Length: 86
Image 1 (cartoon, rainbow, N blue to C red):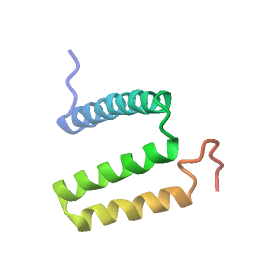
Image 2 (image 1 turned 135 degrees about the vertical axis):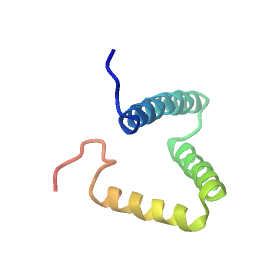
Image 3 (image 1 turned 90 degrees about the vertical axis):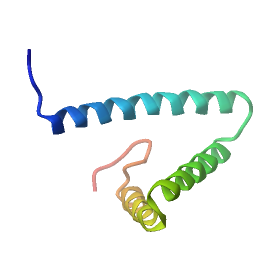
Image 4 (image 1 turned 135 degrees about the horizontal axis):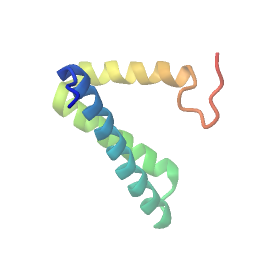
């Protein structure tokens, strides 16, 4: 039996959780679209819900750091449908 270091196992577990969470979000998104809710409304409410939870769990400073990181990722094109290398 292969034994993984705890940190590597933790990373694998986190990646699996993120994948499952993404699947839940995609399903909820599809349900919203099928109910006639516009993508912009779904996106805004998803971001608002996420920020409320991040502030609750980690405080405003941490949430602002995450927003700054997301801004940089947007600027680098990470979220484009067809990303290009810069």
